[in-house]
Length: 215
Image (cartoon, rainbow, N blue to C red; front, side):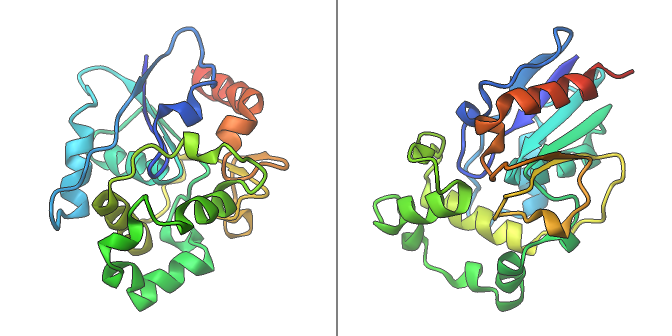
């Protein structure tokens, strides 16, 4: 059984590379695409979904923004199971910060240049959000196209979605990006920051083996 995997915003497979999956599963990473100019979210999801072969049963796994993407892909190509790590199941679970962006439309009016990877604030902001204790955080933050980053922040703030009770949610109880108080996750990683798939990979692997091994 193939597990199609989408990583976090700006992250490549490295943040998830230490995860171990059941022997009967084949992980397939879907790389981030750069959005076309003014591309609609639905159109972008359709392009991401092209990598998923739905001629046979499959699973979906998404981390952070990737968790949002795989839930949208599941609408187009239903999976046997959908698991999200460090992500939310509906817009009702958004943090106050993300809700502020949705209401004020600030992400839409921010200049693309603000997301330029040469900006001195990038390191400190990303590190504080994802895991302030991890000095190597930027090794996971690989997709730094300014338009992609600005577009993605806009889409997270605008996202509207009704919870699918079949989606399996795993959250860290120290996650700042998606605070656990707004959700009722199926599994909780105690002491886990937003970067828990990389820092607590053994615990996450145990959960994934349990979930994907079930009939």
